[in-house]
Length: 384
Image: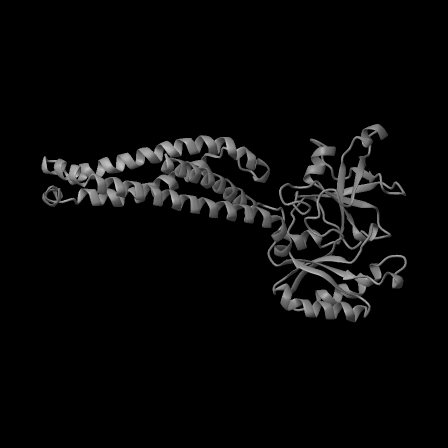
């Protein structure tokens, strides 16, 4: 009963560890809709007293200097750092043709103000239309680019290029013409793609943020970036320089820790179950040495003796595994909130846990079974 209970507990923990490990694997291999390699997001501290109307003048000074640095391959202003959540810097958008009541029922949609090379810098595909250009500035026609999810929501089955939308937060209530559709990204949240509306930063706002892709590491490049910014404006500096890997580490920290802890507990429980099974079978073989000797003297083959010991051990293991599997199926629902794209009853995780447990149990039982098959009948009977 004790060994069976150990086996059941080990299976419960191994099943949970398998579920969390598969969930973590899905998170780490998730297609974010943009390339994370060599991508960094930084913020320049803006001395707003020097730029009372807008800080675009600071960007005009530092942008060519940063772009000229060895190793910088792509560069674009942005206002929202990654993984800030879907409820930061949002607005209700109204499509042309919607009544005010219909527009009021539209959901809040995140906004980002970006430069002409933003989608190229991140590696976000332009699905229809075009990206922003240098003419999309204060003097140009108000324009916007929408993600594929926004296009499906507002214009299902239609071509969104040329359609017009406006933000409820826009005091001027100006209509923006949709000039492009881009792929959905996980820029705001890791676990799900966020519908986005993009506007040219010169037609909206800029607060010092920019994204860059480089051929060298951010650590090696950072002194040169800081020097370029101070060369453009001595009162400006770099704030919060982070690579995309740095940003990804935070939402992945909890899944990694959960998977590590449950895997550790599972391995400890599995070791205890294996030790317990080995100990009880070794004791049984030692206590039944005379009986085994008599049977072998009467013609029992070593393979038959070994098989019977293994069957007894696996019977205990299978009973414990059956109970553990039932408990795991019920308890795994507690982990639902921690899982990503993995069902609490995921057959791969549960089957892997069962296979690992039974394999270890078989190895633990094989040693006493092997010892039993090597009992010398003459010496066993002589000892009695």
